[in-house]
Image 1 (cartoon, helix red, strand yellow):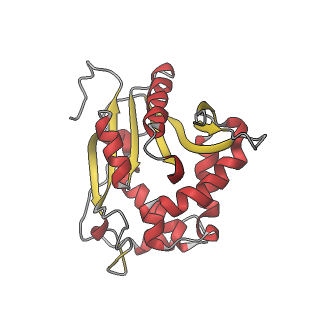
Image 2 (cartoon, helix red, strand yellow; image 1 turned 180 degrees about the vertical axis):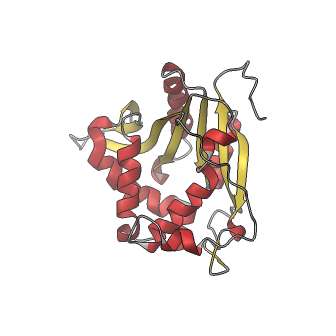
Image 3 (cartoon, rainbow, N blue to C red; image 1 turned 90 degrees about the horizontal axis):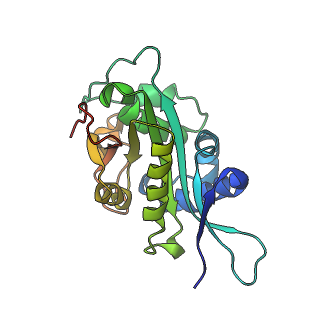
Length: 236
């Protein structure tokens, strides 16, 4: 059985991007729903990698026939300090059309802007939503290669990320979970749902953007975990 090692992702910047493009892209239900190509998500995934690499943890292995480490799982994280001015709280409107957000997105690829707008609709006001907290530890991406699924790798990546968040003296951990498998993983580890955005309500020109998700998922979730058991602002 291959040995799995858990290490900082900083030395693996290029392999992490390749993992996002060639494994996460084809495993993640919402990118599958969009039939997103590598070109569609390259810039978006590059930004994800760059923003989360400093606090990233990766699972690697090395086969007998290889001299190089192979990434079999990644967890990209970043720390978000409390802004000087809190953003205005978002109000969920089930009848909202997101065409304007997609049209004015930062990326030239429309599918990248759709992904970015959906995540923003869930976590754009996270500091307001989670209460009076100074530092939020965000889990941006957690993914394990299909060939290494059901070996406890995702759980270990999450456990180590929570340990890192405590070491960085963060108050809360947050994540946007769109796949049913990741939502189940976070619930099992004590995360609770802060906000839910049904895929049927995320529309562009009145047409739902994400349809026929391969895992049968119905909603994206903003989920959180409190690192302080006596936190009076806990929203559970």
